[in-house]
Length: 192
Image (tube, rainbow, N blue to C red; front, side, top):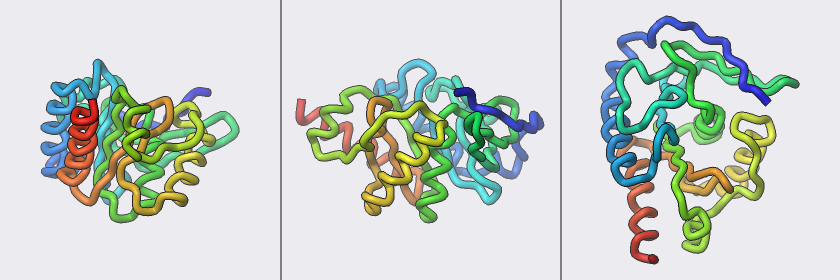
C-alpha cells in the first residue's frame, strides 16, 4: 500500500507559520527527542488550522523542527489503492497524517496531536492505558477504521496506545497534550 499525494509544493503561508503553537510544538519536539521519546526521525506533531492541520514533514527529527518542516494537510481521501493526502508545503507530510486526521475529525476540541514511537507499550497497557485492538499499517483504510472504532468506544480518552506502533495524545492546547505525555512517561519511570 502506497500513500498517494496531491501536493502543492509552495511554502506553507507565512500567516500560518506565525501561529505561536508551532513554536510550542518545536520546543516540545526537542524535549521529547532529548527524553528518548522520538528516536531518529520517528514521531510527528500537529496542530489544527482553519484549512486542515499543520503537521511535521515525513522524516524530520523532532529535535530540529524548523518552519520549512511544517506541512499543511487539507484533506485525506481513501480510494481502492489507499489514501491520497492533499497538502501544501515544501515536503510531504508525515506518513502518519491519517492518524492526526481521524483525531481532528472525531474530536472537534482537539487542537494538537502528538504521535510518538515510544517503547514499553506493554508496560503502558499494564498501567491501564487503553489500546487499539489490531495493528494496521499507517495510512490504510483499516487503520483509520480501527482508530475510529477505538475513539467511539473510549470517548473520554486523550492518550492511548496504537498497538504495535506507538502512542497518540491529544489536547485542547499544546501544553495539555505535552502534559499527558509527561504524566504517562513519569508513571512508567515510577513503575520501573
